[in-house]
Length: 220
Image: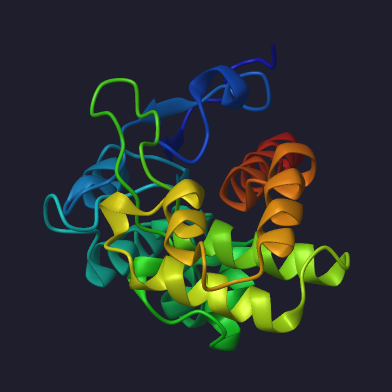
């Protein structure tokens, strides 16, 4: 396990488990950020703040002003994967650094809504209980690129997923809603894709961000 580097605060929850995060970067891991948490970390003297997960609907979300406060206080602020990707796409012009595919999708305008990264999770273990729309979107794109499903199937399945309220959003629900309206052979091929080739894009971006912070710490 890497040596602990003082001054690194990471807000992490359902995007990546602590068991997978800590071997990459030992830091001060805190729960998904709510309003005021980044401000507090900066006041405490954090040198690097990595925002991955944050609350969306349960409590007030991370304010833009507190990110700017942290940057003006001298902290390096990075974002990825979930709330971090969203805020970085809005605040990179002020110095916040965005990392990963989801950040790039928000920055380009391919993703717009907070709903893309929203999900429900256990408040104690942070285990996800729904699937974020962005993971469904990108896995449908991947399945289409691999020739598993047609473009029309991809679009129809995404429509069913998008129509679900985010706490109820799962692959199983999407496929159930599409039954009888999309060719069964394509649904079956997508089920097989999920079993063998499904990717967790939020987790991948979170790991990229941790590796980026580790390199930053090693350079200092």
